[in-house]
Amino acid sequence: MLKGMPPLAPFRPRLIQDLKGYTRDKFTRDVGAGVTVGIVALPLAMAFAIASGLKPEAGLWTAIIAGFIISALGGTSMQIGGPAGAFIVIVYGIVERYGVANLLIATASAGVLLFLLGLFRLGTLVRYVPVSVVIGFTNGIAVLIALSQVRDLFGLEIAKMPADFFSQIAAIAGHIGGLNLYALGLGVVCVIGLFIWPRLWAVDSQFRRQLDKIETVSALRATSRVPAPVVALVSLSLLAWALSLPVETIGTRFGGIPQSGPVFELPAFSWETVRLLVTPTLTIALLGAIESLLCARVADQLSDAPKHDPNQELMAQGIANTVVPFFGGMPATGTIARTVTNIRSGAASPVAGMVHAGTLAAVVLLAAPLAAHIPLAVLAGVLLFVAWNMGEWREFGRLKQFSNHYRLMMVSTFLVTIVFDLTVAVELGLVLAVVLFVRRQSDIFRAEAISRNEQQITFRLFGSLFFGAVAKIDPIVTEVERSSTPVNVMLDATHLISLDTTGLDALEQLHKAVEKRGGHLGLVGLNPQPKSLMERSGFAAKLHTFQ
Image (cartoon, rainbow, N blue to C red; front, side, top):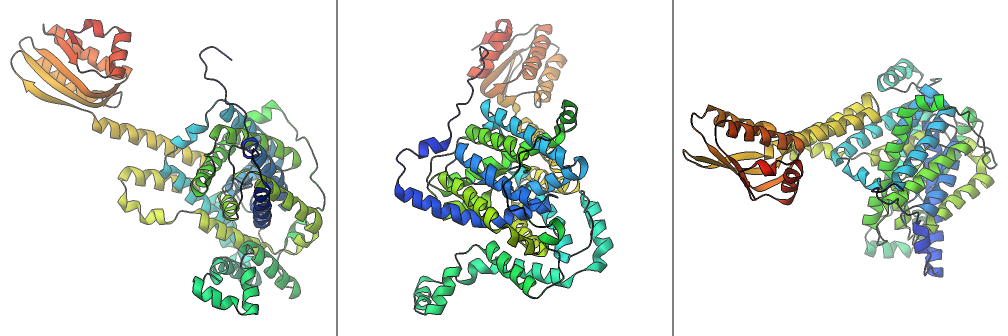
């Protein structure tokens, strides 16, 4: 390690810490939670892969392999990793433009980048992304996910959906005459069922005790614990199969899911290809880092487990995304819905996430042929429900409560995410955040005249004197230059918080103007940072008064 560089982050998976004092009770809780989350993840993993332009097994094996690695090596106790809805639009665009082989290379490269971000302790930098930017691109991605499911929801015969927003709308509009009412009916029933099922038996405790006395009702209430996506998947698939409904299924489009393990395969690799994939790689890494650490923060708030280690989490995410592409997988990150389910199911440690991966593997290996009968319209309904829950729609109604700066960042990020892509949206959001922050800080700085006579003018400085605020020193320079007699200028810096080199240059110009008129410049009440900069630059030695 080079001298002066901060130490690298230690590789300490949370699993090692949580296994100390691990008990049978914790293991029982982890198994129960893991099985529950595994069942929840089954339809989501397939739906995310299909919506991304990949085969359903790509999502399943990503959830299994990446989910196991992220839980085993991650920096949280409760987080569940796997394919996420936020990646749908990104992955679909990369597949459309570069092909599946290059998606695998971009994912593996993003994994290396994520690992390095964690290794060099850069995990905390993700927290500097403004919440307005996060809400803007999250809502934008939710809209794009919903739009991408219209084809399967309506049962439209579109050979291949384009990747960009306006082309998708044009393609849907051009084929709307081929609407399949059976597919639409299944999709609508699925969405309605997903909203109703969790609330179906949500009754007050006194009425619940009365219902439980009825054996049939008690048995039905027990089924309410089965995750809603699983209920929708099984019941509507059986309905479509029993009635022989003319709708497209996983079997008709993909030929089903192989009842075997993934095959290790090296994609064609060259540095020339990697150079072309810089933007997709950065996009996957950026979104993976933001999603995983936001999910980890949610887990911290909902559980009593120790707070997450952001650097260890990024290293685990990096390893998972580096490994998964060699088994035909897609990008993986922390998933909020499955993590919340894990916590509410009573998970005690990362073992639950590993059990979730094992549950999925068992289902795939034992029941893969049954997946061929799942209607794509039902999976579209599941993803529409995911998109609805993913978006923070109430924030649009609350915009009037915030400043114009907040509104501009959120709305512009939202619109650019939809019209262009996530990378451009986040870049724009961050640039706007910086520009608006500079403007806000420059508005805060002021130089206020507190006394004035023929021999001396005293100003009090407030805020930070930096490159965005130096123009406010110009009126003092102008006043000195217009003076026909020597004038001394005293600056009270008691409330000057910070100073940068551009601000220092502005003070030096003021000093030259004062000396040119035969006066003296002094500064008093300096705080440590401005004082240190002035001493190191040699400016302090030029001043008449410095303290």
